[in-house]
Length: 338
Image 1 (tube, helix red, strand yellow):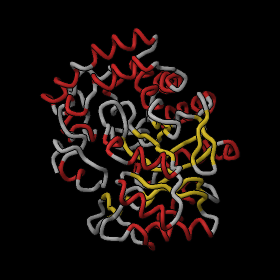
Image 2 (cartoon, helix red, strand yellow):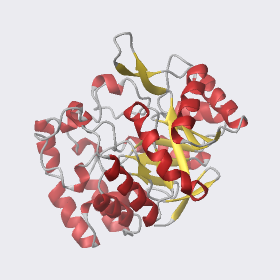
Image 3 (cartoon, rainbow, N blue to C red):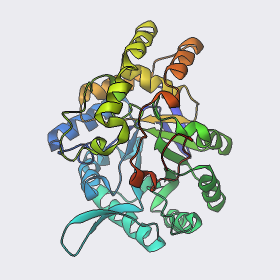
């Protein structure tokens, strides 16, 4: 893997997202398995680890903190606030988007405690609470930086206009949004804006939530609690149509001398020197495959083939259902539902 830059940090071009251990894809994996993936990532040269207050309602931060603590001097630790779990009067934890300054401060302080660290290297606004001017949320994050609780600011799933507004309030080090061969909304503005402003683009779900690995050949086996079951492009009919893209992708991978997963990671990284791939996994083997993708070089002909095969209009189904679409500020293609 080569190194790339996020604000003041130099990191490997493939990072590790720590959501999968305990959030969004069904039952949490064992602590032992999670720790095995984290240690394998450290051994493989991964230097950026990404978690959030939301993931498992704090469980991910509590899990990764002790493992990463002995390595803090050589890694970059990222977390997020502004979307976290809140316990209702019925005792049930629910996800709440809240970008008010006092909430962000509380989220950050809770994250510091769970992670067992004095400072979070890169702290993101997980979702822009559009009831709150983005300048107010970013302003509070800037104060947290002044107090030494965080070192750099990031945003997640915002569009170009909000990104520019936030960057005028305080320099933004990173924008984290979904970006892969089958989710190319970044190309509608934010990818170019990040390059212009010197902001790293941290591409989450570069594997298309497992689709681009070729290992998920059907959606009938998705377990209860797997968020993909509510995503339009994972609906059975849409997914069956999307699967037709994998055979020609496999042919391209064979010409390039790599696996589907390595090809998917490499394509993302070829979209700009400011792009960092952020896959998540609970498998050591999958982790190592992702890392190998960070070293694959693709020529212009291969990139052109992939761009043509995965034209946005060729993908069946939106990336989010309507409610979730309303929670993100990213640019949308004309054919996506609003």
